[in-house]
Length: 131
Image (cartoon, rainbow, N blue to C red; front, side, top):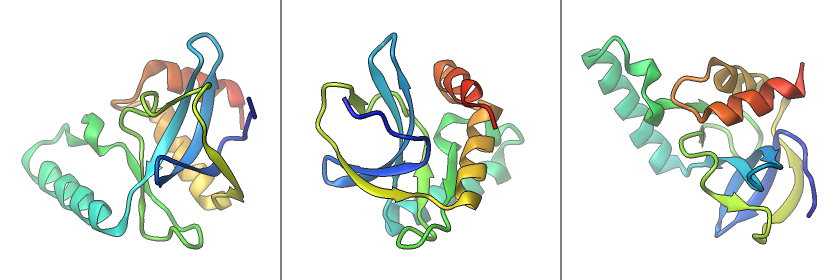
């Protein structure tokens, strides 16, 4: 299996994802799904509506995302919900040889390290990466 770096963009099942971490114990790969423009708008509307209704909305798992600024993906959400349920080490995926930009790397890492609504194992794996 090819081991990639945090922030690399891959294609899998007709979509684009950002490689987050590999869990060697569970043989699971954690990914952030890059949503299309329409799903990103829906997610942002949901986020706005939840924030108006509930003060605890930022802890809701559905709201774990970062809006990307990386070329060709700008304005689209990197969605972190169920980051461990997309792919296993035996699955086939294609590397694109591209990374998200430095700003997006920092935003994504910061969002994950907050841990709100994310798998604890992902938070632990990202903490191990260091700065």
